[in-house]
Image 1 (spheres, one colour):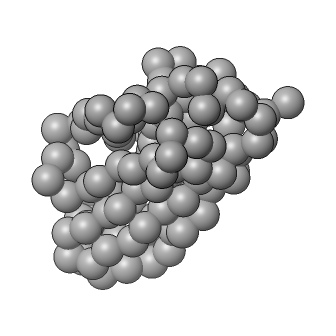
Image 2: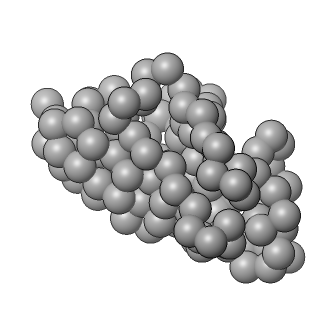
Image 3: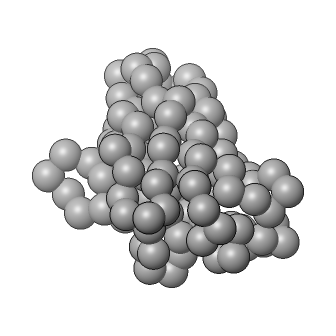
Length: 115
């Protein structure tokens, strides 16, 4: 079974930066688009950004110009560089395939942005 491990979250002040990492076992990620999702308290899990093996990517409107998704060597590692963070970015961040989550959801990594 594919396992996903996210890391890099933490507590940061508004305007700060964090870099999230995701590593997945198996080949499922290398054969699919990968994405970052996030779930704020009391809300559903939403798509943040996704990327193809070739590097094409798209972002949800609220993070455009602030977040950068990357995927070195089209492999099983995924990053999310988050700059100019806002309190509304506070959430647990997860990675998985896109569209549709083909791997079991990991524990996620908590990002908390204070005002």
